[in-house]
Image (tube, rainbow, N blue to C red):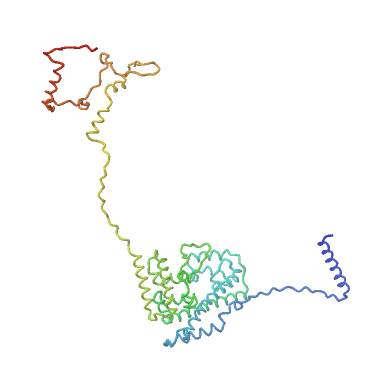
Amino acid sequence: MSLADELLADLEEAGEVEDEHLYQLDAPVQEVEDIPMEVENKFQTIRDIAKLRDSEQLQRVMREITERSHSERKDAIGPVEADPEYQLIVEANNLAVEIDNEINIIHKFTRDKYSKRFPELESLVPELGNDLDKAKNSEKLQEFLTPATIMVVSVTASTTQGQLLTDDDLEVIVEACDMAIELDNYKQEIYNYVESRMSFIAPNLSIIVGASTAAKLMGVAGGLSHLAKMPACNIQVLGSQRRTLAGFSTTAIMPHTGFVHSSDIVQNTPADLRRKAARLVAAKCALAARVDGFHESPDGQVGHSLREDIERKLDKLQEPPPVKQVKPLPAPIDQPHKKRGGRRVRKMKERYAITEFRKQANRMNFGEIEEDAYQDDLGFSLGQVGKAGTGRIRAPQIDEKTKVRISKTLQGLEIVNPQAAEKKGTESAKYFSNTSGFIKVERKT
């Protein structure tokens, strides 16, 4: 028996002992009643998930903004971070970011609730309600949608398979929409207040992109300190919205375009240069935000210089290309090249030209039988050589112009030494004299 079998046997014995003790208990057994299970929905109303509107912080900030909006700005004493109004602006910017997140949550809640009635629709919930015939009212929808989108909504509303909502569900959805609209109004009020105080918070940034765009950038970034820590590539896409519209054209959708792309300095440039302009403006905004973050140049001198630099570079991009100068052709370089003609070449061609004899041998008369010069199978013939004459082969004609000339001595111009000629005559007269003969011939022994 292995160790594993022993362990299994021990476990079985322990289970039997426990069962015996259980059977010995004589306790009254109560019948279990069937209680229907009720599933509690955690989020019945929008107030269960969206609690920012009723928070004390938002109400306090909005009250202070209302009070300070109707009063004039006082000169700051001491560091800017210690100023109560600056602290209020930073807190309001942080709340603006939270409001955007809260609106997204409300939108998702409303979309999920209303999908029971109109699954294909994710907007215009308060306007439609349970009566989908309102979707065919183009006058009301033109305030929110384009004509092409109105056509899609009308056709989809007539063919939807949704169910009617109860009065309680419809009341919850309308309450959520009212809360989203109210939060959006709070956000606009915060932006307007921050925009009126941008000359105090970020004067250099306001000069470049304007007070409105600067306030939006600070609101999305969460304050000036957070904006100063961002790189230019992130500042360029602040405020961009990712739109995924199924079935709609994506031609007009411009990705990676945020508040910087919507600023006046970028929109005033031609359409084909706006991306370059937005990239350039975002880089200068990063520099201006860092200057404002350290509270340097409160008069906006750095912002003016940065904006002038941007305008100068944009003007340079819009300039037409320079006119291409028509350059004259350079003087050709006369290099020595091989001569293909001339007196020498003509003489050489005449010297090595084919002779008349070879021309006659290559010719054949029409209608005449040729005689083989050697054998029948070779097929060589003399052609027209000697047929018209006596049978003798004439020598090729020699052209006097091209004939190789043998050098001849020029008569009368030889250099003659008279003494040498006289001496030569006297020496030869000893042996070959015309008058004297042999005197004596001795035989050698």
